[in-house]
Every structure is written in C-alpha cells, then in structure tokens.
Length: 72
Image 1 (spheres, helix red, strand yellow):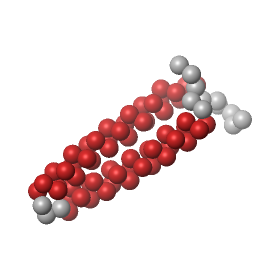
Image 2 (tube, helix red, strand yellow):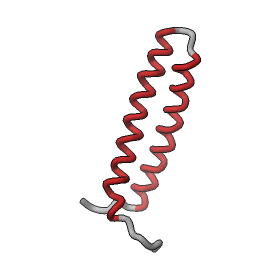
Image 3 (cartoon, helix red, strand yellow):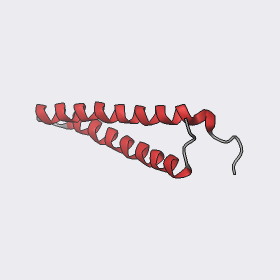
Image 4 (tube, helix red, strand yellow):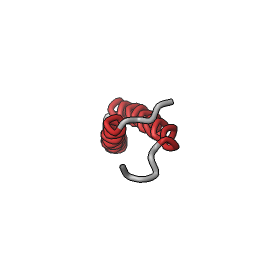
C-alpha cells in the first residue's frame, strides 16, 4: 500500500467535512419533518452518509502508519 499524497489527504478531509454536513442536514430533516415519507427519506440518507464518513475515516486510519512523524 502506498502512502497517500497531500492532495489525496486534502480531498479526504474535504469529503469528511461534506459528509458531516450532510449527516447534520439529514438528521435535522429526519427529526423535524412532519411528512412521514420525508422523515424516512432523511433517516435513510443519514445512514448512507454515516457509512460514507466511516469509510473515509477507515481509509485514513489504514494509511496513518505511513504518515511522516515530522512535518516536511
């Protein structure tokens, strides 16, 4: 396995931020929607984005041992 490049790490960090925002938005939709179908859709999307977030975190953790210990 090759170490991630700085650009790849930036992309993952941006993606984590985006997924976090989507998690919060869908949690809000799921909790406030009066329409049961909208509530269900929000909760389904919430789970999807939580899985995406976890997948991205796992990718970072798998490459953590390759990260330099000193700034370069």
